[in-house]
Image 1 (spheres, one colour):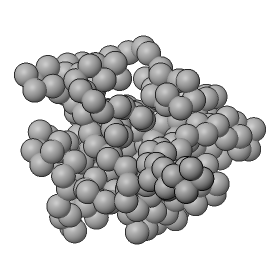
Image 2: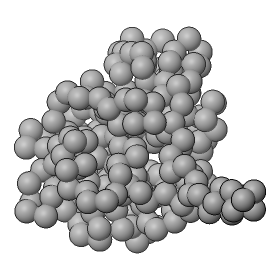
Image 3: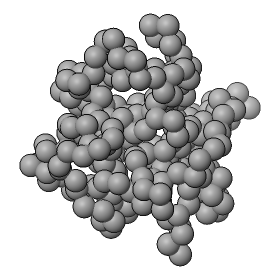
Image 4: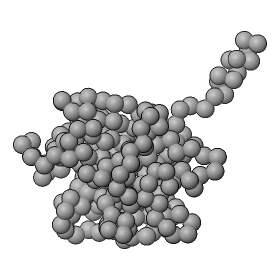
Length: 237
């Protein structure tokens, strides 16, 4: 009987995504760590009929036996919820890469692209993404970059006054770990970027959005509601 218990314990699947609340420099954040060797990370935008999903509950309604164990809004979008920048889902490009500067945070260059494949996820600065032309199963462009090769975005000022609830993602150099974070307080870009660089130790990190930032983390008993969303990133198991 003891032997059977050990076998069953060994055979149990590992937890998909690890989410936790973190305090850093006087601000509260929630992080969700995704292991690309074991977790099925992907992007969601429309259903099979081309209708924009727009919410975590809408994604869950498309699943049969799978479970949405983590999700977060993943890039800026127009009023019709179409992606503002580059977007690929399941190998199909829905929006080209935007390389020029423009209005709003998206156009605060340098911005970047999250590229997802089976077993890897990497944040690229947009011009590096264009130059290297990686093959991505899923990709979403947003901006600005938070951390670029270990350095904060050059426009982030320690005395900045713009404060919002913000969310974004950082990836390790080997592409095997992605850490998604959302602030639970209203923070500046400098504070948010510093959290990724100095606390999470991410060499590259990308801003997703502010004000509309939402997180689905059922392990924490959390699933934010609010504005209808555009691109969403998530893990299913």
